[in-house]
Image 1 (cartoon, one colour):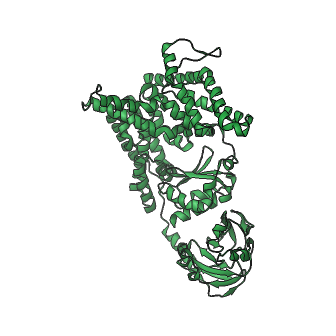
Image 2 (cartoon, helix red, strand yellow):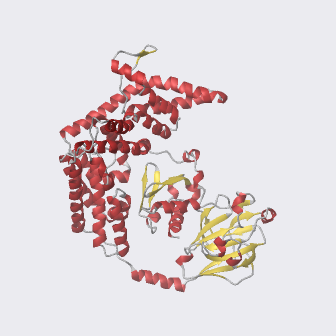
Image 3 (cartoon, one colour):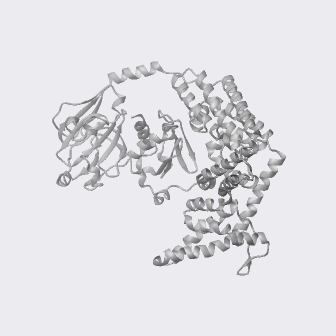
Length: 615
């Protein structure tokens, strides 16, 4: 019931089901694409018990839940028809800003392929370690086979990126992969190796080795997305299945080889040279800076902007120096939260800080960052200082990660290279961060959240003194829930209440309050009274199967209603003729928030008669 409550309150405060174009979730956050952000109430969302915070990133309205996000998401899906969200609905959402769009694109292209790169990188890292300690010879066939398996993800990176970029740019992924394969074709590779000029229709093709390249294929697939749209408009529909792929390949691949690919290679080389310069002249810079500002990067979504540099380092140098700074920062979040858990006198905060502190050490930092450190402010300052100091040590000692991971203790294998130097030094770096951050959090202190037991006691007394009355939403015969032929209602699984066998077609509001949700099949409506009572009116049994037929709604989610306002008109006769039971349960879904919910002892009722008393 706790997850259901959180989901209902969040949905109500993002503007209701009608304002949600699309919703998904990640490890810690509900990610909404809202049709109108102005209908959402971030301040109220932040105050919901169980919600750790709210941010806007990449054009998304994100609600931070923490480790329970998947459970809340499941309950959220039960409250509306969110699974049906499609691209046409998403296009109605307001356009993103330029920076948000760029970050969203980078994340969408690089994030899906991380497991493949991580697997290949770790395999090569372990091979290097096994050779160093004498467990395997680098001249053995076992080493030879495992080594080219580990190399595959890097060598064929243009094909992996072609797929993810095509998905992001909404074009054909398999045609994109074919173009990526063309860049790596043995015949073209042989031409590059020979170094002799190659022309296509009189135009020179750049002799570029595209294996392990990053930027060229992304630019080519971006171009392809426009070429495919144009050709699809021109080619008659019956011929599209054959001629669209043919023309897209024939046009895009040569342009890519002649111009776009070469341009992408130049951009990639510039990026690689900048990174190599920094790595040579100031190897401490990247881990130091990232270790200090990583919390700000994550809050704004800017951490995705480092993906191109990270993968460029991996493909050109065989290692990367970006993630070590993230590792020290993440450990700092864990240290600060654990310090808060020990020092705080608030039992709820102690429990939250201890659980989120440990998950931060495993790389999931949002719960600790938003739920504890950023909320209390001073612990966040300690995290940034401690992360920078640990990152500085990692930079000075030339810590290198040989895979794309390594931002938590679960990714320590990424630091195993030709020797154990990086592994040892990253452990020292995070130890420095942990001690520094913990000590600073303890010394700087924070404004502890005082438990307001007396205030809670007063609220309980008020609840005893005040009762809430729920009126009848329809005319008919009132019966106990036990007479409803559905265990969900008769056993009061969803809450206590009463049922009505209707004698007319109108359903009106039983409370003064707001419409929290209108099911897409129109057979059920959720309301929230001004007193806080959450009411569900479920019109008939199994009527969801009618898919809205015979139901006409007069309100939308978020609408303000008063007792007697018309909500739904139902053709009860038609429903009965189709074999459905019209008995209508009226449920107080947040029954657990009250001492008792009593269905009044009445028989025949009219609209507006008192049918439920809440105390």
